Figure 1 (cartoon, rainbow, N blue to C red):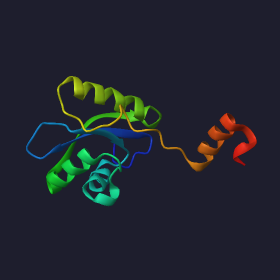
Figure 2: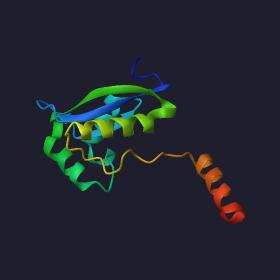
Figure 3: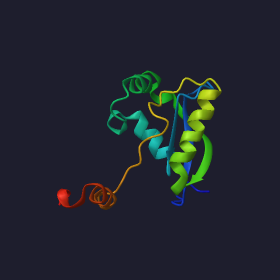
Length: 122
């Protein structure tokens, strides 16, 4: 599968070059781009200061391992699975949640909120 295949995602583990310690599990369609985003402060997730501090400390010595591939529709399920696996193996992960919250498009969010709140969101 190529890095440009949009029907699948990669489940990846971040680690410092020269170690086997996975410190974060995530998913992405383009892991090389996501790795670069982790390296630059503007591409990082807010609210996880210990993870961001570790990224600063590791700097350019950050790399990844592909743990699995998954259909896009199953990305979160696979990510959660590998978070559990890596924690079970003793890896000290920086993941705050079991897996990142699903990101919705504006249209999807509107449909979900409309279904829950009715006409009050118009």
